[in-house]
Every structure is written in C-alpha cells, then in structure tokens.
Image 1 (cartoon, rainbow, N blue to C red):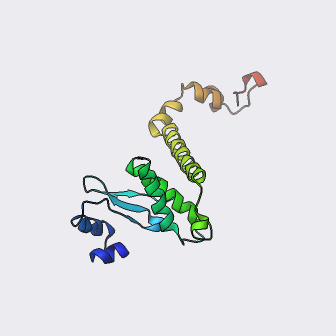
Image 2: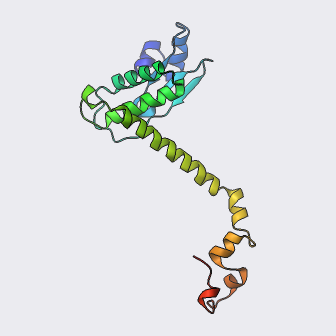
Image 3: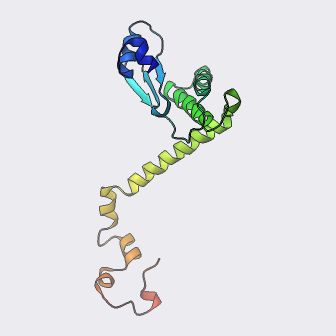
Length: 171
C-alpha cells in the first residue's frame, strides 16, 4: 500500500513502473506474505514468492529483509537469488518474537533455502514419474513393472488365487 500511495495508483506493478520513470535505480516492493515484486533490467515486472511460515511477529522483518538483501548483493549473488535469500531471512524472523534479536543466523536461512530447493526437486521428479505419458508406458499390459506389481494378465483375470508362493507376484 505505501508503494501505491507514493505513486498515486492502486496497483503495485503500475506503481513500480511509474516510479521507474523517475530513477534508474533498482526498484522492488516487499508485500509480506504476497512476496516481492520488482522490475528486471528490461523494466518487466517480476515476482519472488514469500515463504509460507507461521507468523508470530513481523517487527523488524523489513529490516532483516533489507540487511539480508544488501549482504547477498555485496556477495555478488544473482538478483533473483539475492531476493530469495532476503525473503527467507525475513520469513524466519517472522516466526519469532522480537525485532533485531529475532533475526536468523545465516545457517538457518541457508537451511530453509536448501529445504525449499529439495522440495522443488522432489516435486519435479514426482511430476515426471506421474506424468500421463510415463503412466501410459508404465501401466501397459506388457510392462515388466505391471507384471511384477500385479501379476500377469492371466492372473489378473483369474478369480482363483495363485497355486503357490512361487506363483505370487513379487511385492
């Protein structure tokens, strides 16, 4: 809202673009649980999502964000990565009571980032494993995986159980 009030518009993206006409500086606006909105080098609107956390206190979150962002930029992190680092630091701060004394340690920020990256990789693998194209290949009637998991088509259509343990499909 302060960004919108500064630019006299009702939309964050419009506000950033309007302010960008006045300065060549990097522009971004933090929006709490809605993440960060910013202009890339081409003047296009970009968004960095917030980390979903159980918020107990937002006092000092902006200060933590700006400090972490300044650190990341000084370390020559890529802009999007620097914004993610700052967002993670601010999110962790919000899970604790207190201002500056609730600021997270760098190791905590890096741990949160690594968990999010691992979850994203797992999601990608899961999406690949359960894609419709892969599912049709894996569940075709002559698939070794299907035969191993479910038995042969004869066993599937038979109403009687296999004669012995050797006839049972492997678990």
